[in-house]
Length: 247
Image (cartoon, rainbow, N blue to C red; front, side, top):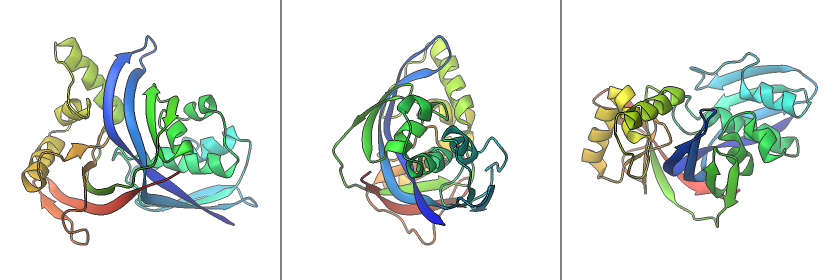
């Protein structure tokens, strides 16, 4: 039995710089690895998948990225995932799990990792990196230790719908700006996120930002009460204090 950590990734900033003919969006972003992590137990004598913890929205069939990562490296194993990273939160939970399996198996090329998803190349690399192209161009950056507070609403945001909203807004004359070009599209498709973001900025200042396509929001530094969370305008908001981690 081998125990693995699958750290969450945080998109510190996100610029969308274009769109390819195949529909993939070109990005420029800084991603960092967090101490918040799923935990995987891998037993090479078996062939199964089970999930505990934050299981809502996590498939256990052949679409699960852990199963797909195992097929990619031609390995079989019984894997148990203890989920601490919420699904649909913009923290790369499924990609983090796949990245952990790829590292365990010795790693694969960036191109192979990308075949599992645009966040998987970074999740395999870890640490801190400039991410460009459609997620396949990685430039490692020097590690910087940062304290971070994550705010986790009890709802998610669909990433594909968020990018579709981005395209529709641009087609209607909107110009993206700010630290995260998906903030406006995400709040457009999920009004609860818009109200939660206003609430958190009222509480903790203007530097509360959206993580990726959301629904997680974050601010640098440790603020709020981690143990009790918050009661936002749309219900409970989990609060997690974490730090960035090297690869």
